[in-house]
Image 1: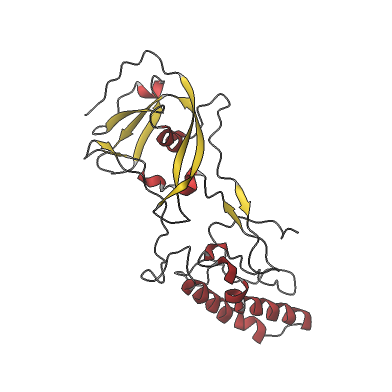
Image 2: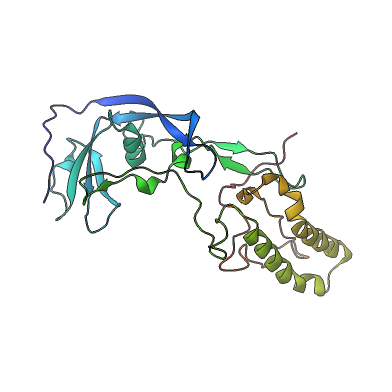
Length: 269
């Protein structure tokens, strides 16, 4: 089994604040010439990483050098590589966060930013800080290439092809799937307005369906960033029970809630 031997008498904790490149805009692959991100790694300087050549790009184990976990042999066939966090702090942060600091805390997730946009009757969407390293980079690109014998090049995040329209748009940007999902939801709500409803409930469903129809106009200001859309909430039935309509009306379509939106608060003043 390939193994790297490092004679480090000690494995001190370090705190390393560093800058990293950011893309010109969300999902872009071009580095911004003027803007950068900033992060801090706090933890042991040397990390032992183990990689299984049979599972390219997948971290098998990671632990501070010198700890009890490092004393046992690596699984058969694994390649062991010691990472110097002083030289590669971004990799160290991706692999272990700050879970080895004095408080035993992991590195925080990206802070949420409220965006004032779209339908004035809808909640404001919350997005993760686009300058946070977890939002900037494709975290799967942080790995040791056992075949090349070197660390792989890190990559910015990409917008993956949409499952319904893979040749036309990404899953987080584009209006084709928004309209597709909207139309499915309108069709599925037909049975509610066709049945017996009180005047009050019929008005609620009609208002809901109108807001679905208005989505392309009411959310036009988000441009291609359609993951910001906050879909209208379906009315409840006469007993105030939500209508049994799944959030994803089409197994291949985008779900009601965009992946970047997390229970946003009410629209601010």
